[in-house]
Image 1: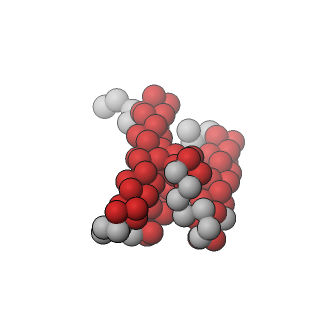
Image 2 (image 1 turned 45 degrees about the horizontal axis):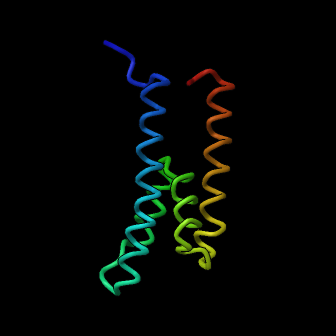
Image 3 (image 1 turned 180 degrees about the horizontal axis):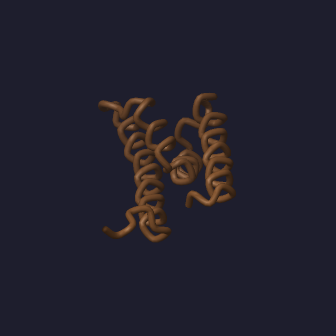
Length: 96
């Protein structure tokens, strides 16, 4: 059986998740402007936790969305830092 967790597959996953994070901020911003149903904050944060933190941060500042909410202005960078530390640890232990 071929290895699932190849560098190529991990990079594709991260690219998709970050694109999803970026677009989710855009979509939620547009919904907010129209006053329609919004994406739950829990969903936006989950996307970031699952690997889309860079895209979510980029979307947050590009679209000026959720920048005044501490949960996002501090929380998303903290998630990103923790992800970087985790990748460093896994690389140090040679698990990836």
